[in-house]
Length: 143
Image (tube, rainbow, N blue to C red):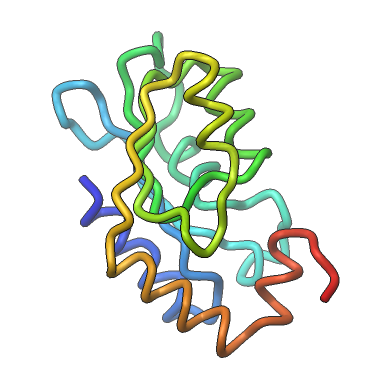
């Protein structure tokens, strides 16, 4: 499942964007939707990877048994989306370069797994080194 999110992150980077990818899966592993951060490409600050995957999945009757897979720990905005719609599990590629809301999600009953996948760490480490101004804009910090 993480491979799909990594593919999306790489696609976003190739487009000149921020390399964060996500995918929403049904409990049986069926891919429901996938996407990547498109803040730069679309000029839309709300188009995070998890949001893009969620939108691509379309309406679902029940999200409790779905799994959101993301290459990076979800920010508060995306963590709120997970809580709002009751997504049951989140699989995080890495939380070294950004420790978002995954602990908060776990504290509120979401099944969270953090993998610290080296592909995900490498994508973000390289990106932050190359484009620190864009990274700080993305996380809402002014260096």
